[in-house]
Image 1 (cartoon, rainbow, N blue to C red):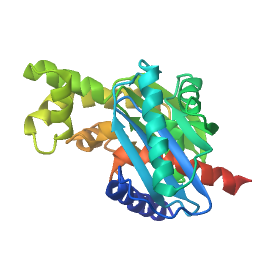
Image 2 (image 1 turned 45 degrees about the vertical axis):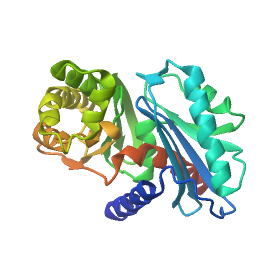
Image 3 (image 1 turned 90 degrees about the vertical axis):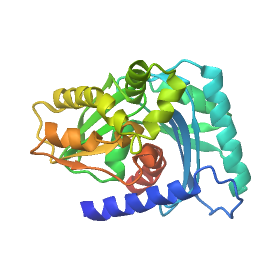
Length: 279
């Protein structure tokens, strides 16, 4: 069963990769779910139909959130408003409500306030790794969400969330290391990081930061026995990330997904379908 959910999720992630920032109008289905993810490195809006298939997706790289705190409130609101306007133009519907998320250990009202500043209602809010756990129907395991500023871990046992933790260490810390090592500014460092599969030196410079992330996760899961660790978030896309986690956790299966950058916003939107199924 786990394989089926993983396969379907991977397929949906590939769909998002194909349609992201495509504003071509389409005919919208009667019912949709909208997920909005306020990340440290980007803000994303994903829209799915009632089967869970993505039909619209928008992404803007942005430095408006740091360590789960909005440092540029106006900028964050402007980006979310712009993305929702694009959703309206693409689908021909006016968004009325959306689901959003927050890093574990932070105040969910931060995300809620930004989204509701656009005039829509936040119907539900869920912490980021827990949304992924719900999407993948994880019975026993740990979800590790590495965003731009934080590493979050959700531990699931017998289908129930038993622990959700978050610590400051993410992709931005890799960028800082690259900037310092190469003597370049942060913007250029971010560009190098996104090309980590083409730039061998990036993996070498990122290694100690990723090792720190794996140590953080080791602390999070201490005393628990997750059957697998599921990697999500743009920070996990850095070349060599999974290999380091495999070395740190040789007895635990490390699960990668096809386009992990989009996994959290997809999971947030899909959480609406999960709630419908529980009603």
